Amino acid sequence: MIPLFPLQTVVYPGERLPLHIFEKRYQQLIQDCEEEGISFGIPTYIDDKLEYGTEVRLQKVAQKYPEGESDVICIGTRIFKIKNFYQQFPGKLYAGGEVEFLKDNDSSPEELQEELLKNIAILYVELTIENPPVFDIPFVSYQVAHKVGLALHQEYHLLKLRTEFERLNYLIGHLKITIPVVREMNRAKEVIKMNGHFKNFDPLDFEDFEL
Image 1 (cartoon, helix red, strand yellow):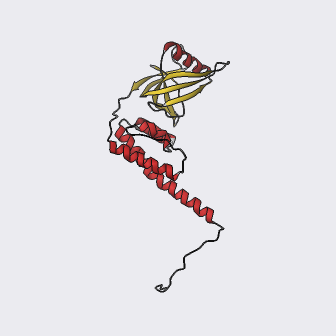
Image 2 (cartoon, rainbow, N blue to C red):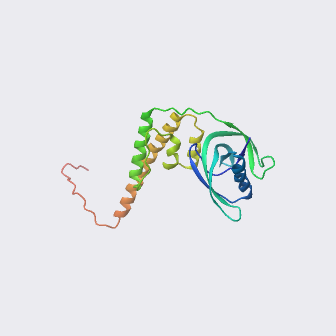
Image 3 (cartoon, rainbow, N blue to C red):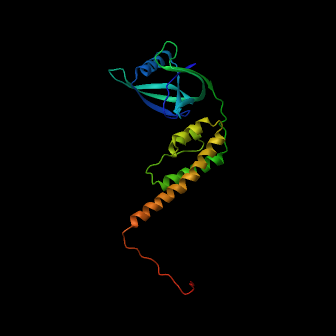
């Protein structure tokens, strides 16, 4: 049984998560984290339901405001599946639930990591991103998952995969689809820029042409 703070986002193990706390129920939750050292869960609210999420612990309170609001930094720890959800944790304003923490196989071939980094580099070149993030081997898929253009439902799907091998292959597959789309968009932009400009076409040779 852990406190729950549902959000329309995906948090991964090891992720540093800044939050602005303004609701009274979550002000109470952060106070309990400070005083009792408890952790809480952030389940992803998606498709009108709650099922999977990530346990987080409070790392620090960065700023407190006069009306009780605060800015906090949390760190993701482990993934869970909700067994039962309760609108109120016993005796508290915030929600809670019974959860099952999921086991994970985090081993993966270095070749897959290299292939993923190669495709990420290609994506960043196509997007002309200045000062792109740099990743060193070894790394885990969660470190790059928010940085390759996944939609929310794709990030959530990644959260549910229970082996690093599956996660790396999923990200590689996503990039192999995304990169050609980005290239085509870049080509389309260049074509649009050329509209209305004088073009220098190579003359065609009709000697071998037949109707």
